[in-house]
Image (cartoon, rainbow, N blue to C red; front, side, top):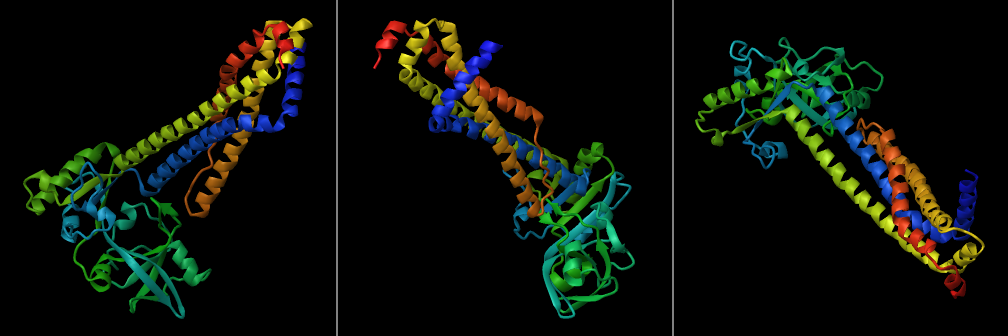
Length: 412
């Protein structure tokens, strides 16, 4: 133990004497370790965000979009292209409990932008025109007042998102107040509970109005942009999709599935795809960080070789007074290991700080991003950094140990 401490003191004195070179030597290790910590943290945060979004929406949801989907991506309607193949009659047909016993809710909707006017205030926001059972189908909860329901579905009523309520009314109670959209008066009947961002859309920066009013008076259309379906259990999703596809083909006079003018999307499959993408991206970026560690290791080997050359006379003197090949080898291995250990510690600190700053930025942007640091990633980063130093320090260490003391003392 005493021998190890003596060797460590010698190594630290040498590193202090070459501060600039030592700092440059460990830079690659710092970048690699910080990259690994940051990437693993961001990957965990992204997956937590995705799961959180699904929790808000509910896991047993289907989305029917107009336009055909294919292996290359989602239907064109998902990109904002106008397709008019879905109607309220389609949504109504899906409410047949005899044919669709596992469907618990059907939510046809259209969306658009709007300027809300209240007294001398105005707010630019989004509106979503929904049906009476949309709130239960999409797990939207009410903070005050009531939802749009069968008794007011044909009236000019409106439910405020939390952000819109605060911008227009502040701490005042908005229930019963009149607001205008395109000079059409609406009575505020409720305020939704905060939902935050759902798939990068701020659900609190919107208002909800009845589907009839949104289609006819605001947009002047007779089609739906989406139909949301809530199924009773995840086990019944696939069979329900098959039944929905069969019904819509019957209603749209489609005999060949290749001619489908709609797409039924399983939210769980979308989550699985997003998780797969984040995993693949995390692996790729981890590989890039690994390459940085490799470059750092090569840098350490080169610097150690230069150090061996510069300290040839010192090595010869040590061997001349009794130092063994083993002690010389261990000194240089310890020096390489110390460099990479220091680089690993600095890299961990940098990675944690970067990850924390990213999570702060994401939360500032309105995303429910969790700051997650895995202890395993820290242990792995330290272990890999030390292993890198030892592996890439072996050749210079053995080269130093094999120096002939007489020839080393002659070295200029």
